[in-house]
Amino acid sequence: MRDVSRKSTSLRSATATAVVRACPETIERIRVRDLPKGDALEVARVAAIQAAKDTSRIIPHCHPVAITHVAVEYEWGADSVIVRASVKAIDRTGVEMEALTAASVAALTIYDMVKMLDDRVEIEAVKLIEKKGGKSDFQDGLDRPVRSGVLVASDSVSAGKAEDSSGPLIEARLREEGFEVIERRVIPDDRAQIVEVLKHFADTLHVDLVLTTGGTGLGPRDRTPEAMSEVIEREIPGIAEALRTHGGQRTPFAMLSRGRAGVRGQTVVINLPGSERGVAESLDALFPGLRHAFRMLWGESHREKRARG
Image (cartoon, rainbow, N blue to C red):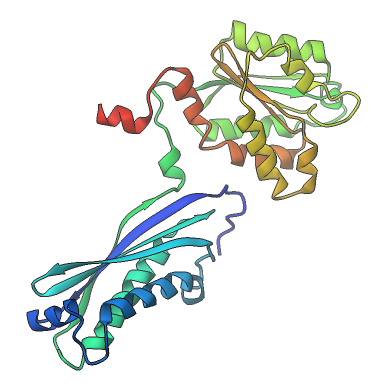
């Protein structure tokens, strides 16, 4: 199985269909619920629900997911019934396999209940109709690249006593996400210097995003959140909450981070932890949702509204 532990949970949904084809007389008996074995439509509906819940037990590489809803509907043709299965879950991975399994098992159930009446019955065209909630749904297409800066606040790194592992990690991830990195700066854990550099990034370089690393804990020299009070004009509490929530699902130490996020002018400033692991987990939580912050700041409408316009 693939490791999906880096992903954040989100609402996922998928719809799949399967076609059962038979002679018109058989289809009519299915529709009016007149079969020797009973009501094929209701039995198939129950079978689909159970199949969706059991998908990870049937298909080896599927992850168990916390299914919140399964719906089964039927569409009719002269010689066919189309099973439409929809599945929802709030989880780290999609539910397209659950929807496909549900539609397939519902079709198999109908097949089983009519096979003694019609030797021409067959199942065809099992296919995925749509899926939502994955990373691609949140990949806002921006009109221009996001210009970013990276600030490493560390006494030991700035003094050459320790290697900077968090800064390069942030820079690499930003480039991977298609962001431009204008500058990466390393300074001591000094409040005044942090304030000065953050203002430089926002007011002189006019970058769209600044990610800081270090100085967010409880140590005597951890002053990055205090420096933020002199820099940001509007707080973005949801970002800091999301980072702590994501981290807290992986280590209890995440609750000790005092990192903040906010806006100065047109620049988003976000504090990340100092550890390499904390940075990596925080970046996983930030993307892909962070992109939408710039659409909002730049005064652009939501993608769906713009498409309708």
